[in-house]
Length: 290
Image (tube, rainbow, N blue to C red; front, side, top):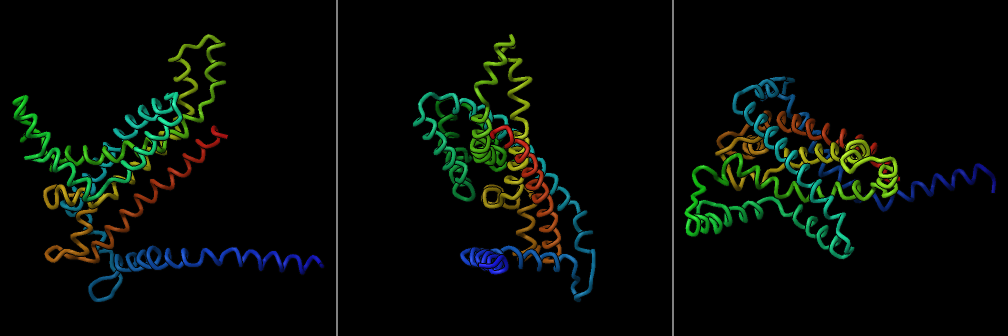
């Protein structure tokens, strides 16, 4: 067989390798790429089909600006809480001597991180609503009335619900990085006279920093794009960007598809930047696991 024939055969084999992926690529085109194209086009198209920046100018309206602020604040706070608590929990999971116990707790975190949306909101209403099980129990047995000082339908109620699925997600993200801390590093640090605090300050935390930073960005994007949990708990009571986006695109009173498209593009840019930075940081962190 000549070299040209071998090259043609390799090219043909490469094309054949793509055939099993065609249904998936078609699905991505129809579900993701085309809607994104029409959303981008709609954000720059006026009521008469002309090019306009009017829809982006509307994002300066107070309700939309407040929604962006609330979403960024809620996502940032729950991401930080998730990172701190998730890292601590992930460390203690890695310290479990029983491999079966580690797998059990990790599986529980996997299930919990996917328990989101309306079911999670209803669960919190049943437990911590104004007539929830825990609310009534605290009132009856401890004479502690948590309402109206606390409400599951408020900002901090949302933060609690978001942290519920942020924490186990961070646990799943940080466990591989913690497992990548080699015992030889700790032994070398001890051999040089370093204390446990010095080991974490100069070795452990610097190695974990890329994974922690990547987890923070991913948790921020995860919370920023959440919709069903916030809608079920608050509806109109607390403005968030995802809720405003839903009202603009599908609502009957506040419907404004052009402004909704512009808001969707800005939201995608924020989430996209977070995920891109996450990929860059996580790639840096993976070098310590090799």
